[in-house]
Image (cartoon, rainbow, N blue to C red; front, side, top):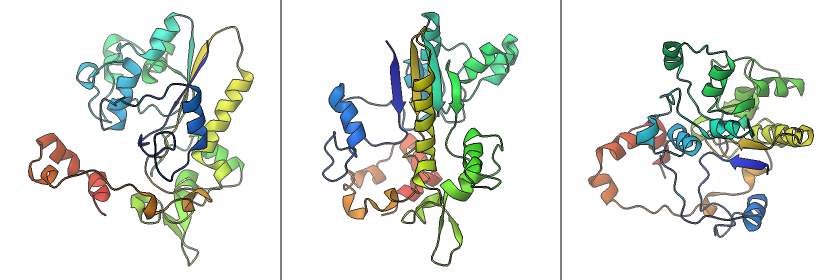
Length: 278
């Protein structure tokens, strides 16, 4: 049996057609749900990307695997899904994001070379990376990112083509404006839809499915950054929905007056302050 494991980042469960949103239509995800099992009471283990993913990859609570923030590495030697699959002869491949931080200090302590096969697999949560792309590339960015080369090959030339095209728009004066912090989210990104990050990863996954050899079963982890911020989308997607399609948030003022210290700390973060604005 082969498995295609698709993961989206920051996709709310109730903003899908198959989970009952009154206006948003997600026909391809709905088709997957109709053909499979749709879990109505599944919960992530952390509100933060990295720790939540580490729980998905290890099957353990955050307090157990120890990766408590996006910056904290998963301990070397922590068994992951990729490790378990490799033990039974299944090829676990990655296309996209893991938010994994390698435990380089632990590897050095144990005498594991970071660039060895063991070191690379440990740094990739046990997956064999076909494309490792965390999806957010602020300056200064690694110039060798594969998606950068893809954009340049299609004529989108810049030192950081993700920032210049996928994360930028054009204002009424023809000036390039940034996609950060929702300021220009109503404008279409400068990148055409077929060259967007999501389309690029989808195309690479289709290439893998077309070229894969049948001798060894596989799990392909297709992991999209979107709809994670920054929120700017290429045409025609930028104009499909508006404020009238947003479901009112379920909240109470008591959350502000009787705050747990951890919740208070989350709310003091820069992105939390941005999302607190009407």
